[in-house]
Image 1 (cartoon, one colour):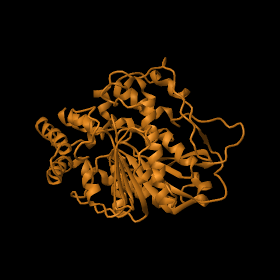
Image 2 (cartoon, helix red, strand yellow; image 1 turned 90 degrees about the vertical axis):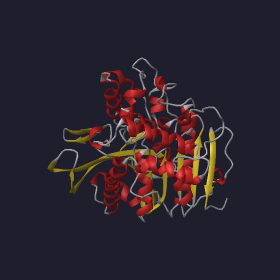
Image 3 (spheres, one colour; image 1 turned 135 degrees about the horizontal axis):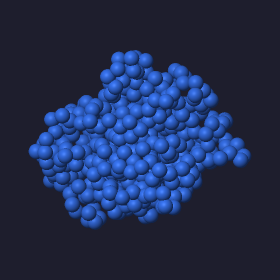
Image 4 (cartoon, helix red, strand yellow; image 1 turned 120 degrees about the horizontal axis):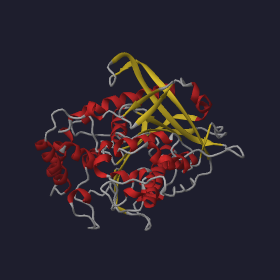
Amino acid sequence: MTGLKITSRIGVLAVALGMTLSLVAGADDAPFAPPAPTGPYGVGYSRAVLVDQSRAESATGDADDHRALAVQVWYPATVPLGAEAMTLVPEPAQAARMMAMNLDLPLETFDYLNDIKGHSFAGAPVADGRRFPVLVYSHAFGLFSAENSQLMEQLASHGYIIFAIDHPFQAAWVNLGEGKSATFNPAAYLDPDMTPEKGAALEAALVGMHKAADYEGYLSLAREFILGQQSYVKGISLWLDDTDFVIDQLEAKAVPAFAQLYHAMNMERLGVFGMSYGGATAGMTCLHDSRCKAGINIVGVQFGEHDMKFPITVPFMMLNSDQNYYTGETGRGVPVNFEANDFVFHEAKGPVYSLTVADAKHMNFCDLAHLMPEGKGEAFFGSVSPDAVNKVVNTYVLAFFDRYLKGKSTPVLDGGVPEDLPVLEFIQRNTDE
């Protein structure tokens, strides 16, 4: 159990929902109204299931069962008059099943998800007149690809086409079509050698690396913490293969459901990003795949087979929760000595940014902070306003991709933090600033 506690604290394993959250918003809670995206485009939505015939699905043990990936896409669109907006989570069953499974509550408890409308329109025609940069997103371990729908709508409204991958059996629940689905199966991915003693040592390393007196001390403890969890170090290869397959399919224009998008996609301007384990996937993809031109890791400990070497050359950004929560010194108003991924920041060869949000915990960085309002104040969320974190994520993710995929001027990246944003620290290397 101690090992699971460690995992929940870094937010990699969403089974921690059942351990850290005892009360969730129910059907009687008034749904929140997501703010409209601020870009000039409407937002279209589509979805497809891609099957990789070259890979068997390891989670089922059936050699005839091939790896199938659900992919959701948000894109700039011309929305027809009178069109009806979709729910914020395009498939509410994904979020509902995640909450129900982890909290042992009936599915109907979460019917209110059907009343939370977003600003996307299924099948809307793609906006004419230009080609748009392409982004590929991976979710947190145990969550789902629509966990950050507000961010997807914001990016699409500003001229990006975003393909979000559901990694089956590592996502909460995935509809694979034709009556097939995949449910989260954490047991297959836990470290079989995890013991209470090892878990306690990892927890001590986690706290210690944030409070280390110097970089060498930090690096030693970070190495112990990251490389000591080999199931996550090696397991990321599956998500890398998933990402590679999706990018291959997009380059080949091989998915009929996305046919109307191909003429509008600029694959030469490809960004990769994700949250938690999906953020670590983005980091490893951009480290090794030259097709990635810029990447973002949102609150993901940088697992992967890198042996703590990370000479990434493309522009890269990391968004961090307030690690003071791990050291037990919340409210200090100053950052910890070292963030979890400071070795990435230290070794990057290209432009690299690191931003920390004050009073935020891991799961503040997705829409669950809005979809589960009763979780605020529990161990699941920090005390920061969900709206404030959403504004930080929308502002900096958009500015980063605008600068490095569109070549636009984005002053917010130049170092001065807007006063209305709860940013505890924002640092950068290998930039002009």
